[in-house]
Length: 257
Ligand SMILES: [Zn+2]
Image (cartoon, rainbow, N blue to C red; front, side):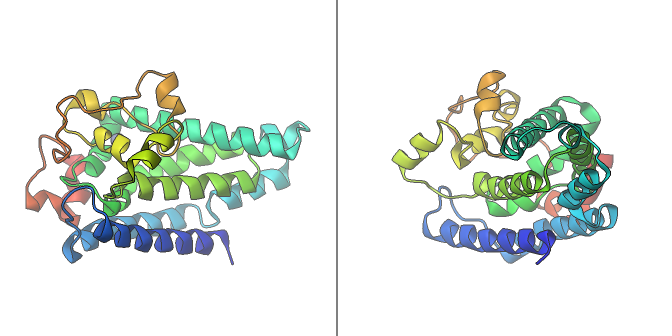
């Protein structure tokens, strides 16, 4: 099985599991309907077709190529493989944290990323809602890091799996048992921490940029443990709140409006 099929299978399995949990133990009223799923999945479908066209072998394939050609830091120095895997995984995780922070701070990048934040509710389908140009920009950025670092393919695959699973988990509308949530918060971004990031209040939106671990936010002072006004149902942006802003077409043209 190719790593692209493996990732697709794991993503679909997790997606189904979280949809089930959202019906069983929702944290907020469940808004998952067919139209909503179709719009969000439409974006994800366009993104994955474009990503496949841009980089057929995926990031792990690129890592193999760099290894073959002896290109990139870890393909030039003789570091133990376990060290190369751990350092690559952590550096890629940090890079994606930094990318997310920049998506919020650089105006033209925010135009792309605001499509994701325009969702007025948050559930597992929000994890599919990224503008295809954001996905392509992110792919180019990650590809550059993978090649320069000479990251081992297994580290790249682990990172991509963790990123995908983290995105689905942190957006899921699930009420975790309080004890589990408290323990997870020592190290991870939980759904309730990511919900703060989806608040319309810019102070809250510009916090908790992590997708899996929360130590980068803690280290750079962007970690926020609670909302300022405590209203968990206030989600999205000040603008783009109408039903017509939530269609596939509107989301595709949103960055250019
Ligand atoms: Zn964001």
